[in-house]
Image (cartoon, rainbow, N blue to C red; front, side, top):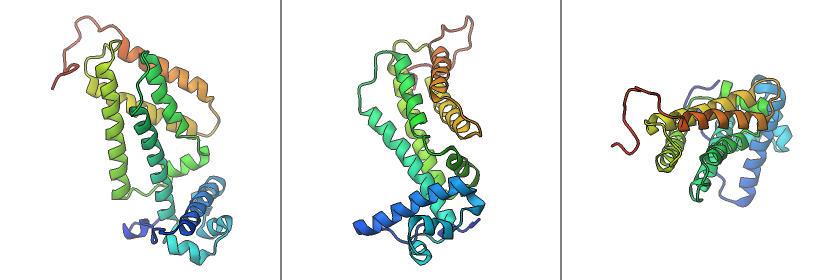
Length: 220
């Protein structure tokens, strides 16, 4: 796997609609090839053949398959961030259960790629500084949004909303990714229902008697 940072960046940023269509064809083809053959056997030759472009044309856009995979991961992250941003602009449901269900469903919807492709992303995705920065930024946005929801809703009883928001975001993202990407199918409706039930009980449960006090709701 290429370790140099320059080897993980696209070579060519499309400026015309035709060039952008070619780039999208390459990415779509790569997603299918990685899912079908795995990462080791998902060669640039196979990607070019599936995209119906010459190998020379592919290399005009990407220096290697690592750079293509980085772009697929970035596209996956961006889709999730856009979905959360769109939800943030809407008025949240009155029921906190429906709020949590919306967050879980967003994560599930963003993992509707082929489970084999999700495994390739998780196992072989190059950890470039730019990609790690994007991951951290998207995570901060989701945590901030979730914390806002916790602090505003009257059904929420959990005291430390900052830690609770981090737990919710991490639990949803990790559980959804791991269970959908794992070999063997899982019914997403059952996964959604169980995750929602678990998280709602966590944030709305009556405080335990004698529980230690920490940074509470609305604390600086």
